[in-house]
Amino acid sequence: LLAFWREVDRDGTGEALAENFDNAVYRLQVDTWPELDEQGISKVIQILNVAAEKWHRAAGNWYKVFLACDEDGSGSMTYDEMLGVFRKGFPGLSIPPQKLPEQDLRGFWRALDAHRSGRVEVYDFMIFMRKYGAQYSMHRSSRARKSEVVEDFGHPAERTDDELRQTAQVLDESLTAYWNRRGVHVRAQDKWQRFLDEADLNRDGLVTFQDLEQALIMRLKSGRKFIDDNAMFAFSGKVLAQFSADGAVVNGVSHDDLYALWCRIDADQSGRVSYMEWTNGMYRLRIDTWPLLTEVQQGEVVDKISEAASKWIGNNTNR
Image (cartoon, rainbow, N blue to C red):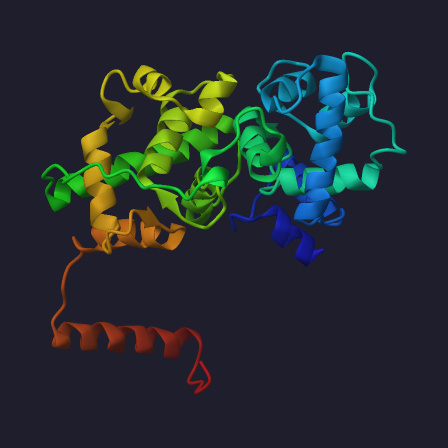
């Protein structure tokens, strides 16, 4: 029971709502479902692709497949919605259990809903299908055809450390608001990791500046649930211009602001950063404003901590 409560009360507040219990049960349940490897996921996608072409002439058009699954038009789908559309006759995909067993569908959903939110949004679905079903996509990824060329945006605009900290703070607050708006529970320490994972289209653990900027505009600024599938895959210059016509990547952060922050964090100028590089860079900017203690002051702090530890824990040499 204590282990279950720990799963329910992930924030450690000591309190939980009914939805927290529901989410915990869901996570525990899905974690028992089959875990498909890339070959298994690709096999499921191949079956979906054939059915999409047969019934909707939509082979490789994952946006149309998603719309078929999202029967209530909410911009997201649950496992039950997905299962219903895959099984039902036209306008469903009419895939029988003999061809696609439920265990495979469960394994597919487990991989699709990697963050265990219980719902998968259109953007998440498209990114997932692009990762694992690129060979069937109507918009083949240029990264799958040739090595990626990192675009050079030139020398960054001058920004003071305080201005960079302000940019980082606005981005952090915008990301928190984004997850709250989606109704997705993400721990504070995980919010950037999840976001950058989704922005990392070729799954190498690194993002380019263009990856980051596009993801911020599409997800944090746009606030749209449905977007053109060509925009989703190619993110053409025309679509990018449409979203950033006011010069802002998100409200309060311009392209130049973001690029200046990027260049500070991308210290080795590789053109790519990992989740750890990004969050550590933001952290270093923040703590640079904290007070510096002399050795004497540091010693006083250590003495006070030791005194408190002795009082509340006792004189235990193993602490």
